Amino acid sequence: MKETQGLAGVTAGDTAISTVGKSGVGLTYRGYDIHDLANHSSFEAVAYLLIYGELPDAELLKNYQEKLAKLRVLPEKVTACLNSIPESANPMDVLRTGISLLGTLEPENPESFDKIVSVAPLILLTWLKKQEIKLSEKSTAVYFLKALHGSSPDPFYSRALDISLILYAEHEFNASTFAARVTASTLSDVYSCITTGIGTLRGVLHGGANEEAMKLIQRFSDIHSAEQGVKKSLSEKKLIMGFGHRVYTKEDPRSAVVKELARKLADKTQQQNLFLIAEKIEQIMWTEKKLFPNLDFYSALVYHCMGIPTELFTPMFVISRVTGWLAHVREQRAHNKLIRPLANYIGPQPRSLPMQTT
Ligand code: COA
Image: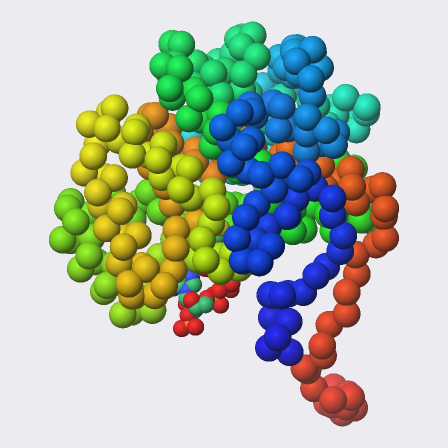
């Protein structure tokens, strides 16, 4: 049983959407290397690539961005519901609830896939700001930062966010995507698939790791306390969030990209100390455990430096990853077979009921 714990190393199906860690390294979306996409593409182009199979040409991209901007409206009942959710709520629960409620008011129809990509940031921002948000920005990154901060973002910030959304968009059979595919395999509706994905991403071993990584970095005042603190945690067998990976064995190919963004943003915002602390944690994790940072570790610093509150980090992941989930829902439906594995039974052998005493 040990070998299949957590389905580690098990190939659970076919996909034409992405490759993760072939020979221990690398990430491709539909055959394109993640670095090429991060350098030369946009989040919306990548969303289209993932969901519809090919990169859009300039006109198709423009139409797709316009469509997303047009669909970015919520029924009044969703807005009212979001306004009634307390500030203290976990924003992942807000997203899950918003998507779920939308599914009751606008049951799945041909536009639902694009609608979900379009409204994910709006659901979060409506709840956060407790006001109607009417912005027509075509770039999701610009839209998000403008709505969050109330002014047009520095282009370096919006491009950094755009790159981060590209990197977070898809990752093969990770836990939330696999969960969404299980839901899709029962021929359930798309809203159920996406709420499944959100609920699964919420945990700290998956999407929740970026928030925990930020809390860790902020716990230390300098590199010396970081070194001591991380070594102490390791000696107590505690997990250091934002490190390690189930599939990659040498490095997470996305990490160097976000690390560079984090370095530049920390410089720009005079938060070099946080970057140095993060780098020290990276160094200790490598020398002590041979563990490397995954995407979540430096993404946390990127988001922090652009003024995104920590409790929104995992929801940022959702805003991007809905595209991967939707791509997998389409793929699962196109070649569907109910996902229903077997369990290795380890309970009591067959036995008789105890004698009735009354
Ligand atoms: N901090 C400290 N130790 C870690 C670690 C981390 N982040 N990640 C793995 N390890 C250790 C484990 O404790 C285990 O040690 P052991 O052999 O002494 O028991 C060993 O490395 C193997 O880890 P394991 O839990 O079997 O790997 P996994 O493939 O099941 O887990 C993760 C993968 C991602 C869940 C795991 O690395 C982790 O929990 N990371 C932190 C959460 C995180 O960043 N999640 C985002 C993933 S993209």
